[in-house]
Image (tube, rainbow, N blue to C red; front, side, top):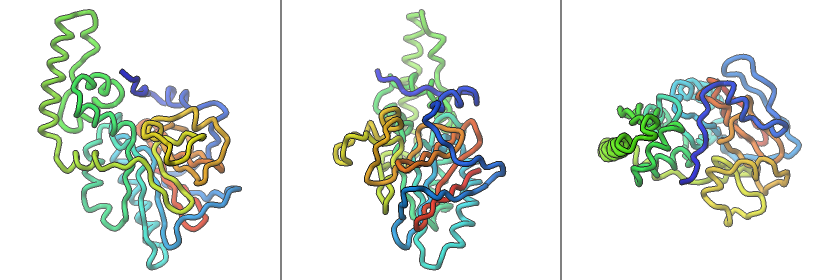
Length: 291
C-alpha cells in the first residue's frame, strides 16, 4: 500500500517540512489580512478582463476560509466594471482540520455565487475517494487526516493503533471499518460525493497553470500523470527549469508564500498556522492576500 503523506501535528513539525534553501518566502506580513505586490523578473499576465484569486490548502479550516473570503469579496468589489472574477481552489479542502464538511457546504452554497469557481483535486480528496472504493484504506487515511474529516460528517474513526499484535482486535477493527465504510457511503450527502468526483487535476488561464502539487519538469503537459499533479514534491521543487506557464500550486507547506520565476506556492500550513493564503492575479500584478 502506498504511503499517504505524513500529517504534522505541531508548528515545529510544520517548520521541519520547510525545505532548507528551497523556500524563499515573500516578505512576512505581520497583520491579519495583509497584502503585498510582487514585482517578478518574469512578467506573467492573467487573461484580459479577468481577475483570478487562487487559494491554497484549506484542510478543514472553514473559519479561515470565511475570513479570507471577506477580503476577497471586498477586493473584488473594487474591480473595474465588467471584470470577470474567478476563484481557483488548489485542492486539499478536507482532512486535518475539523470543519471539512463545512468547507464543502460553503462551496456548494450561495457564498460564492458572485464568482466563477474552479475546484482542483488534491491528494486528500483523492484519499477520500479511495476510501469510498476500498474500506481497507480507512485506517491509513484516518492516520493522515481522514479521522477529522469523518468526525466532521458525524463519524468516529475506529482506533486501529491499539489493535497491533492482537489478531482478534485487528479482526474487530477491520469489521468496524467495514461497518463505518458502509454507513459513510450511505450518509455522505450526494452533492458532496458529486463535488469530490467532479474535481479536475489542473487549470490553465493566461500565463498561469494551476495544479495542486506541481508538474514533472521533463514532461510536456500531455505527458504529465495525475499522480504527479497531486503528489510530486522534490522533482518539481528542486528543479530550476522554467515551464511555459508560471505554476501556481499548494501541497508543500511553507511559513510564507513562495514566489520565483517558475512557481507560486500558496500552501502556508493553514490548519496549524492559522494563515490561509491566496494570490490575486490581475493584469501583470500578483498580490497576496492572507488571514
